[in-house]
Image (cartoon, rainbow, N blue to C red):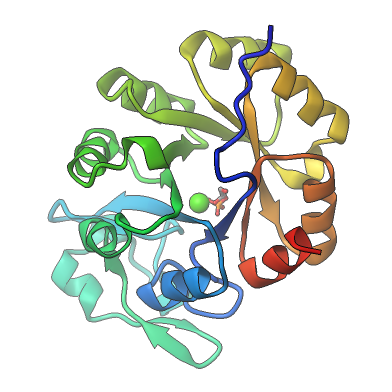
Length: 240
Ligand code: G3P
Ligand code: CA
């Protein structure tokens, strides 16, 4: 019998790095706008600064969004605070993970927290526990090793693997480990895959939703949620 459980909130429209189509990604401006656009989830990425602070940042280097060639891991928090994250004439600052939690944890939304940098597993779990987010969070990563380490330290959290290729061996390993989600690239899955994963007991959350066509395809394929840079358009489609 399938152990598949839908989210109580129904479909989850995760503002991906906030409303990142419109505003500097992974900033408060972007997260607040995602909430304003009626996203019922926020997705973000965790890395650690040189002086040990967890911050929200996606890329391996700061170049694309700030113009600085260094990485988060090469900078202290004070050095990061000197930088501006930019997008289409808007500017904001890199956010400390705990500051984000203090501002968003109490809200009636879910969180998809991606372990992006190395060695952030335990402190991420400690902070999510501190802000009582056990029942509102799914922890994800492309790095299976990070997830295994996270799960060993904090088995009470739901977790899921971000992946491009889903093999039967991977499905079996995820099931055996107790993963609750499978997170396929939206363009590399089908409605039949989604149905099969549901029967196996997984929730399915799509990523890589680059445009509205892909968004509609993934939604119609029956996924349980997706990360989307334009949560306003997804909200409109969900409510058609
Ligand atoms: O939904 C997860 C998604 O964020 C994965 O892609 O590149 O944004 O980390 P990326
Ligand atoms: Ca991410």
